[in-house]
Image 1: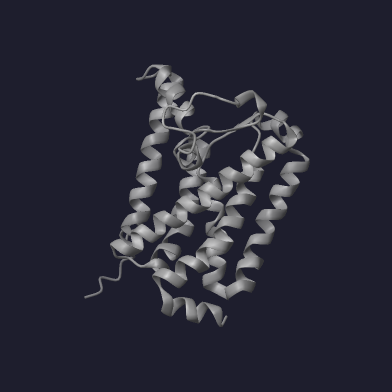
Image 2: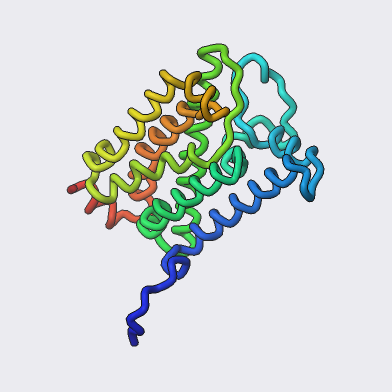
Length: 229
């Protein structure tokens, strides 16, 4: 029976999206509370940065990594620069995550595929960011889930319009980040932080390539339909 009342938002979200959102929020809140020293000592946040922040450039050569050199490629998504940064990224995850999760399947296999895609886009974004820092010789730290979330844009585009849809939805975000690259120092002087534009573009590239591969493996029927768009 239909009650006529709209279904609550969280009832419409695939469980894997809720779980990932909660995990990132909890980890980031621990980090931010530690930085503010409200309830935790600052060494907690320092350890989290050592373990998870993307670090590129000569200043960070040989930097201590308690969980290994590869861990930051994924763990950077669990760290954020502030509540606003965290809120923006979690809203993007809630907005773009459900169609991707549903396309890959709402069972355990689909949830695994969703997390694998998220991790793949995060790794692609991190590698782009590190590569750019090494190329320019500029030492930079980067944190935040926007590297992985940038990969969700082409994924949604694939679902809505195939290859053309993925290109169409990705281009504006790429252009925005190229503009950020050009005026980065000016923006940093205004907002106090330097945006990791290379990680965003890397995430888009990762999502563009990885999502059709994930569909081909985990939802062959839908992939056949998407290819025809």
